[in-house]
Amino acid sequence: MIAIVIAAILARERIPLHAAKLAYFQWTRDASQWFAGRREAFRGATMQHDTFYAINTAQQPWEERFNEKLGRALYRKNLYTDPQTGAEIRLVRYPAGVVNPHHTHPCGHGMYVLEGQLVTHRGTFGPGHFVWFPEGEVMEHGASPAGDVVVLFITNKSFRIDYID
Image 1: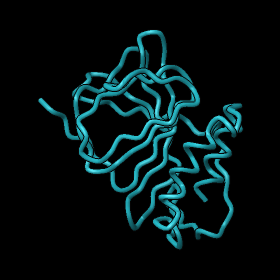
Image 2: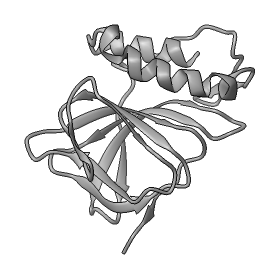
Image 3: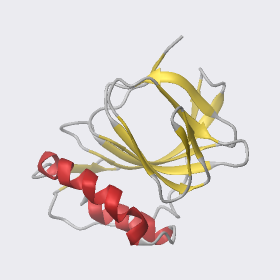
Image 4: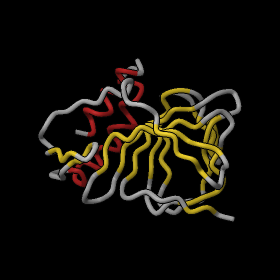
């Protein structure tokens, strides 16, 4: 099911599958057992893992999420949340110049860059890059001053952000 969602997004964004294939398949190899047999939820509906569905993200509005720490909004389109583990897949858009300052998460998470430049504490990454942040790592990430960045955001369990003051 995850493969179907990601393939649909890559097709919509006109990103060649081969550009994402290596990072995606390395991730899915590790995650395949974890996702096997789990029930899926999307927009309040329960979906079986063996049921096809597709999401047209072009028709899904960006959800504005004000971040008090940043004093700015970030934007997201929720695609999937596993009701048993809390794992999430969503599109996230950081406005130009907005970088989440030093923080940690109680989950690992990956970002596949679709548009713009993802600025992180470990470098800057453009379209086609997949970046994985391990659970508990002190990190910062967001958009370059040159423009917004849009990423496919994937967690391995429930998401929370804990800022380092």
